[in-house]
Image 1: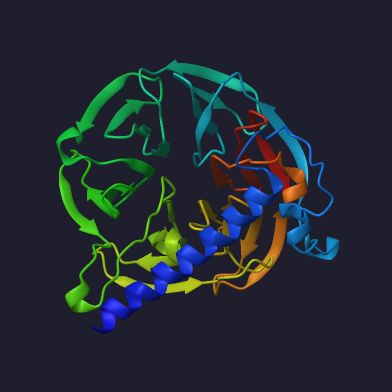
Image 2: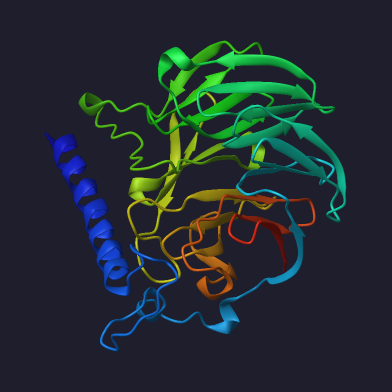
Length: 324
């Protein structure tokens, strides 16, 4: 019974966030024509509802941008040499750390997430995982059509390949032969485990310090740390419309983890990028809402060895580079 009331609590929080955001968007006309201009002075905009960001809280500046030839940019990854891998439309582009294009690989299907590890490129394509070598030659295809999955995030590391499945609301762990090992984060109400609350196609995972597995529980505005065996080790959450927290139905939508264990988070509804301490407390702001076009939903985020924050902006069709 206690687990049931916990469920109601989190559902209520999520619905309240949806109501607030939807109400504001409706009043501003954001649910209609995005280019329409406000004529009623009595209405408030999303930007007016959110407190302005203190300039002293902004600890990064935009230092570069790598334009993309895509109509729809979808995924970003960085390898150990700071090469950038960017997926969009029906191709994968590889850049060096300065933004110079090194190669282009043709793809057959849309890529929702990608990961580069041990001279292999792993592509999550909704219901399957495709493996390429660095030259773009297809090596394997792990099909999951029968399972009814929808992969939204992918992470390859020494212990195997982890794939966040927004449809089944779990993280699947695979070995490097494509064999499924286990599911992580399953709901078990008898044991009081609520599991992942995933209202939409936003469910991200990332590799943390010392090979830790971190996942966003978007409906709870919470980040969760799991052992490789699948046990929940720790978590932190911040629920607020203020700059130090997350609001709406499902935030953050994208995360990356800096070498010191700090979290880079991206939000939708209020497009902003921040850095949170390993404890979850706000460290600094990377970019605020005024630096994104209205309605932007950041497609992906990554960090490199120079501690740069790389933001895949699908509206500008650019990898935007932010430095301390």
